[in-house]
Image 1 (tube, rainbow, N blue to C red):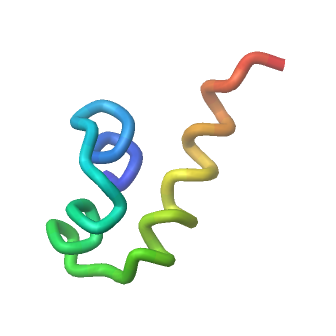
Image 2: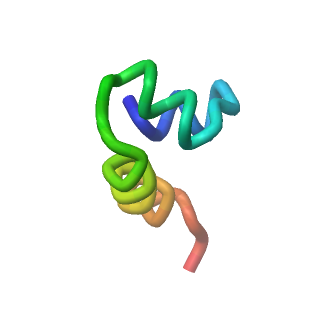
Length: 41
C-alpha cells in the first residue's frame, strides 16, 4: 500500500503516513523494498 500511494499516486511521506495511520519512518522503510524490486540491475 505504501508503494502505491507514494510511487503511483504521488503522495508525500507525510500524506501517506496520515492516510495509513503509521509513522513517517514506517512509510520510508515500507517503500524501499518494493522499489528495489523494480530497479534494473
